[in-house]
Image 1 (cartoon, one colour):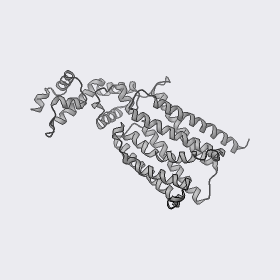
Image 2 (cartoon, rainbow, N blue to C red):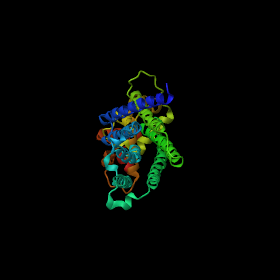
Image 3 (cartoon, helix red, strand yellow):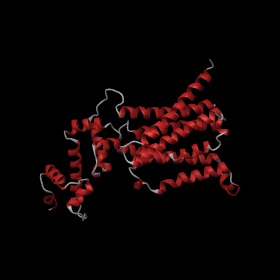
Length: 336
């Protein structure tokens, strides 16, 4: 058996499975009942794009691209939006937090790419732009988001198995490898098509890693899981404070677990073990701390109950009880 044919067949099989896996992940995230609609749609979009990238590589390798002339254009255009989608998965929780300015640069790149592809005569000055220059600019745009998101990850210290962290690491490692191959292609006049197919195979491997993560998270396998350590719990509490998750009056341990992408039963066990408090007690203490900080702010014009509501309390009784337990004083005494 010719080794090249064997590698080709194996690569095609796994890439095809990768496309199917991305479709499955898109469906899982889209119909996931926990988490915000913005987060679900962001992850759904990421996996749709990854699936299209893999499928485009299969079409190119098999010579179908002449039949699907516009599919490669679609793949290139959607790839341009990957950096901001990954950035959104790390930083945004709902649509109100998204500024339209984020889309200016990718839209400009998309317009330039479409003009080059269609070669509209009246816009010849645009499609005369050297393709290498455009590719360099797009890769600088990718690099900007790599540095920005890396700094953010170091600041937030997300769990290494947080899905956003997995996506960030996986996609940008593949991007860097692809950049090396692109340079090789330019300076050494071409690449074997099988090499490019196997680069897309890395996207398939990334999708397999994510689906395994989802299976582990939802407990489909009876596997003994490593319990979280004290440092991980402290990082989680820091993230709750940083993102102000406690301000959601309807926050439950399940919704929090979904936001930080950790199985709720592990989160519950870890919090109980290392804080010696149940979830509701911990969250109410964080809310009380928030109220105390606001009380100390002389510029704050809200009433104590108004501050408590902003912090996530929806019951006066619960608030006064939690405040007394935390400080040994009534809220009015603290303000005085």
